[in-house]
Image (cartoon, rainbow, N blue to C red; front, top):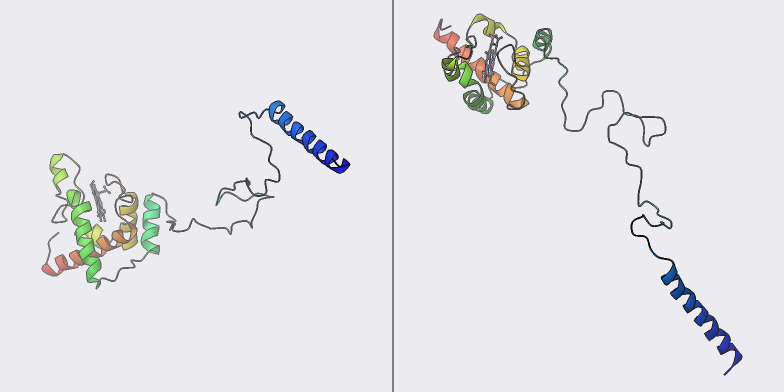
Length: 195
Ligand code: HEC
């Protein structure tokens, strides 16, 4: 046998013994995280989206007034003062000639308002016959003169005995039902003094 072969096989044998020795003596501990060799981007610091920006954060600070995508802010508080302010500031996006909106509004009224405000709008809904304080007529001067925005605020936040309907009636349906009430009011006014 040549001398070179002896050296090669000898060192391979030593290497084999070292590997077997490592397998036997270096026991893996599965209760602990192993060492990462160059973990790269395996784990990164998680930033909460929309969290207040601090020095050292990634990305630029949020522009003041930034809102979550898809969320429409409603800058009013559930107070009578803000109801009046909503009346001054908000206008209905629904044209009173929009037939589809009026039909949708009629359906929303029947489902969501009629139990209290009644099929006649006079405040004689079924639940008032079970002791719930009856709401005022929607054809009384107060409701006739009330601004759309204030009504929208009332449906959104409620008022005294009327609960908030914000979670049941979507924003567009609130305007639809108010358009329906407006057209109903003007029909009643044309008919005469039904208040
Ligand atoms: C649980 C019963 C109830 C339901 C449902 C309800 N309301 Fe009312 N609503 C009331 C009561 C009670 C009042 C009177 C609140 C008060 O004392 O100021 C009222 C008042 C109002 C007023 C103000 C009237 C005024 O002259 O002051 C409007 C406008 C109104 N409701 C619209 C609606 C609309 C639109 C819906 C349906 C989307 C609806 N309400 C559903 C009970 C209800």
